Length: 115
Length: 113
Image (cartoon, rainbow over all chains, first blue to last red; front, side, top):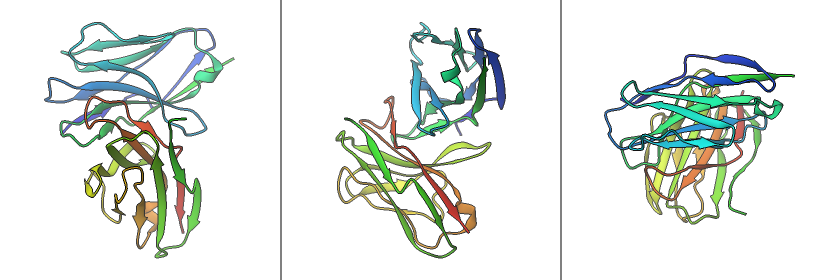
């Protein structure tokens, strides 16, 4: 079974500093996508960044970047220059092996950005 | 505006009283899913649909039903809700079944007393 693990239930960072959220996953697939979703207090699920497993280059989106280590099955999210609006729960996810549109999510990490 | 809508956003009900949560998308997506979100468990797929009249169970389907009579709509039905179905529910849609961004609705907070 495919699994995603986020081992940090809660984290905090000072405004303008950098923080890294950890994620590990387990899959037997060779071709898959990895995602980070942000869930602010509004509860809306917002896609932050995604990574194609067959691409070695780490994905970046403005202040957000990932460190993708395929052999280690690790997919961490780095947030640079943290802003108060980054306060949210962050979920790591991967798509399933079957063609169902399913995403397999981690448990989530609550990030608090402090002024 | 491309979006997934859900109604209601909040619902408090009692055990055994049938309810339906509606979901609609305007992006002509083939795939639609329902997830429930519980603390410490992340989001788990309840049911999915690959197209009109094609639905199947996800990881936690017990106590739920779905239907897909039109491409844009994918309602979630709880025929006899129980307190363990108290949760936050999300509908999602995507163009393809794999390697494709999913678009989520705003969520429905359900409390079953």
